[in-house]
Image 1 (cartoon, rainbow, N blue to C red):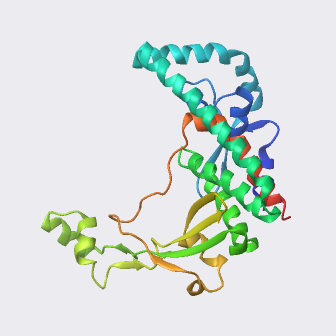
Image 2: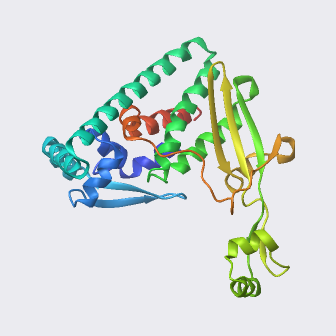
Image 3: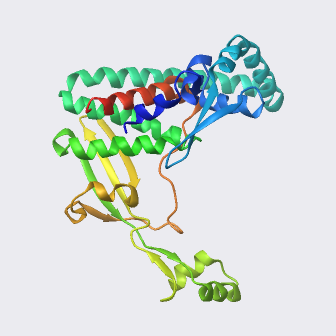
Length: 290
């Protein structure tokens, strides 16, 4: 089912985090603050493979709307007390500048698409909002990874190198789950399980999962624009008829390889490119094919 169709299930009486942010003129960071402070209660959740999307009673959200100016003043006061007035004011000024900068970058990017072929522009536009979705997903909105998967699947099915899409298989190490005997040996040696795995690789009784740390890398490059996305082997392996035909490279090893790509979205960026805008744009991209 299309992502937008799933979201329609709770539309009406309940509002998602993205919708609450839009109605109240705040970012998802502040929505979570309202929850922590007991001003907004989670009424329902929608479960996805990657996490839970929160939903709130629409009437409770609307009741908060006239209170937001006073709440903002309260938050400013608390920030001033915590950081000191000058530092807090400087931080807010920087946030305003960042919002302006990201807004200008968005406008410039979207305007540039007029000069590209239609299908290239479609891919680049989706990549721009997927880039921001990735940052939102790393800031507590993990359920968005399901939408990311749908978008990358559409990239795979409908775009080629001619439009600027290249997909690379990044081969990672297998996952090793130490057996009880190896765990005992690691404890007796006074070292961590991770160090024991790195030094001894386990034994024949240890469990192994091939390609656990492998990834698919999606590179979108056309003209002056470049984007790069990653998705786990387990998520995307079924999208490809023959993985051996893809360009390959080895994944750099870092500890147990369980590290993340990308960064959380900043407050200024979240104001310039809202969560609602991101999901709306990507739902529209997916809907163009149905």
